[in-house]
Length: 110
Image (cartoon, rainbow, N blue to C red; front, side, top):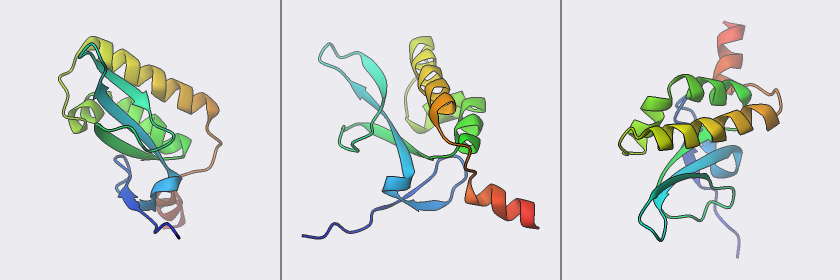
């Protein structure tokens, strides 16, 4: 059975992408009812999620607006959640290739 393409929107650049081109960050409650933020590479953890295009540009922009990202996850601005999100974004910045967002490319051409 062929999987159909699932389209999602990058929370940073607002462009539509195939889900496989995006990073999913999910906020969920663990067994102790504590909120956690996790990088969901298999796209299967239930909870409030945001998607960010796999480019350093979008991740760096997301890091600038951590509080807005937490707002999109519809979670209170707990310092622990902010630290978890910052840790995830730092990890992504270190490990993502230098490719840039299509929005940035279109702005450079104009």
